[in-house]
Length: 446
Image (tube, rainbow, N blue to C red; front, side, top):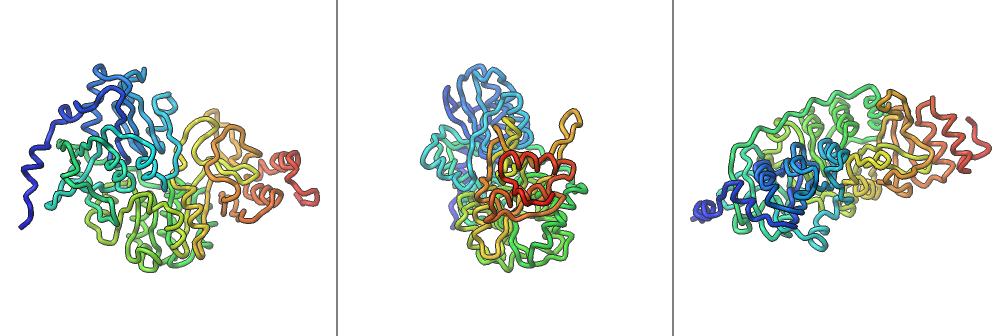
């Protein structure tokens, strides 16, 4: 006979206002990540602003609003931090209302196990099952280690969250929970459909001929990787696999097109593996109770040693800019925080070590600033931009102008290759800059 957990459930049930009463001055509070954002608890904690001082909150790829950040521009009461900025958190950083925490996703568990203190964790979960477990859903990649590190655990039951099967660490048991909060939640907002632009289509056309049937694909954060995923869904490729830190609607499109089967993967065959999920209601419906999907913590998903075991592993990420030495900046524009390192370096390392693996970093060759002036995303040399991927590890670089492979290439070869995929309007200027840095062969033809 199954144990009845209803009595323990009722004993731990609190209103959001009662639950946040546990937070004290100076505490570190974790909101975990993505769909794990504790919507009701965040509002209730913000309402305690004038009672509290110096409460520090951590989040990761969380959409707005975050009330504890918005209610206190002085930061006397609440200070918000992000491991990896969503578009909303980027705007908070622009206003000085959010501080970035540098990281690589593979070390997420280690940060909390060895170095960080969590006084209170507040995390949204799916409704409890009959065995007393709350599912972390699309937040499995980061939630487990944070919950274990916390002195006090509050779960907020979100009736809209899918229940996702996992490899491990996808649930927390009621016996490990201090408070439970219930309440009505708005449905997750629908993301606008991805419509690839002409440059993204051109980038995809350079990549797809280098892919093989049966390859396993990781798509990073950003419009370009997602657009490429959409285009892959329309290609002739078949029997693709999924092993990715972030599961987006691009994978659902591949599945619906009959491209994503996972059957040829060398580890976790038959299962699409992911860490976190952000997307449409259709995506969450696909993930719900799907035995063809397995969520794992980032320490597994993003481990280069795990990634390297997957034959024909393909990593597709985006960047903000690349310099003529092959250094890649994907998380800042000058000193402006854009996103975070996330898993780019993890998958760049792992896919490069995979048998038949390839790692692509993509960018459009130009952009326009607020005044409409066009600039090259291939620059002579970084001064102040944060380096995400070092030149020694960068593999394929792709723009709409072409694709080059920098593995094992000298400084002059790199400069020549990168200038070949820069926009033609900027190539002569980049050649002059390469000459000034003595990384342009005198015998090179323009």
